[in-house]
Image (tube, rainbow, N blue to C red; front, top):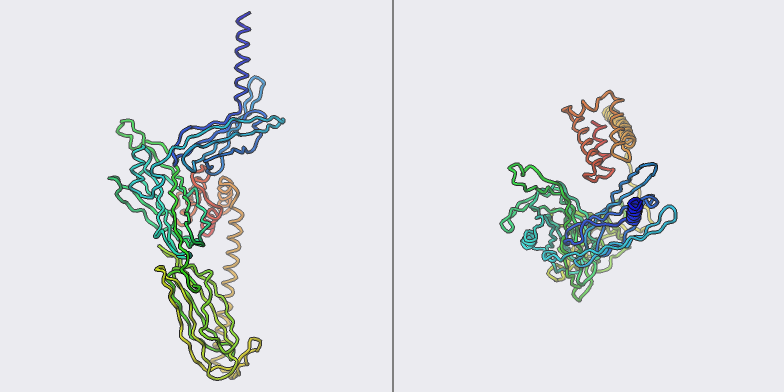
Length: 520
């Protein structure tokens, strides 16, 4: 009897302990490096398993994307139980102490439970304050970490307010990287930014600390300081999956390994923006040239003159050049669209204005010289100038319609009639082709919208059904050596990767590959 009572008490206390610890906040580590990641797990049971989202307060940590959620339902000996697990990935923002929680939970039956906070220690990184690749890889190898890191470099650290500064983020890698993606984009609030295209960049190998390292620029931005002072380019983060080799002493260990995720952040850059030197106002800061077209008057209207600024400078707010002396007539200035040429290493801007001058009198008219002041990167003010031009004009006013041009009608002859008929037939053919092309484009867009579904499996099913209606077997198409087969295999590889959460892709990329298949 006593043994039964003792066993019952043990089971009772075990049930109480399990009940008290049902909801749990846990982490996979209590100490971490500055460039490491931590997995935060929240386990909810029974009445609390109906919670759709959990708000976890963080200090000195930042989440990476949305959590993964898993649910479990058990029915044992007539008793049901539910469990839901949330897993978050986070990375530190600075060295020192970090805190996760406390987390307050509200159950479906009005229950309230608070999970105790967890303290984390983020170890300082000797290489975190450096953008020197040799120093960073030496520190990584000394602390037995994977040799992959991100470096931010600027073509200059001191510039005038408004002067162009090009910053490049380069990924250095001496591991087997499976895939990578930018996971943390810095907010450049003190700069006007122009993104430069690095998609055509090829990886290059370099030697660091006796180790062959591959370097690849993954982002390049042209920055224009909006104010003077000490400005900071915040750190950028990258998430990468690397293959970690298993060292077992087996001769085949080079072919074995496990894929792990790493997070690396660059060191913030400091840009010192100097104020403009005292003097008159300047239209822009940088290497700028000015081009002026030839002023002309057409059909007795205004005299038209086109002026353009071009150079490595922020010309979006540039003021139009001014006449050295007032023009003898009414002047209107029309802004033309600004164009940006995003080259490999910098951004070139071109801004145009059209000057319309309505002469007050007929006869000889002089368009005054135009000039503007710019500040060069050396801090020297430079005058840009276009000389004046004299031409014969007719007086015009902004509200006066231009005179009608006399029209001389020519008699119709056989040659003219043949030409007109030929042109009419060509135009009719072009219109017919344009209508057919527009109808085909509408049909393709309609098919693409119908086939692209919210999820990858639904899209794959819809595409296979569409191919079946055309009498095409998807399995045979996977092996077909044609443009249509290439398009289908490209779409299937993307959908399969999305279904396994190996990559992230937008609806536009999926729609483009579906369009390639439909048009093929």
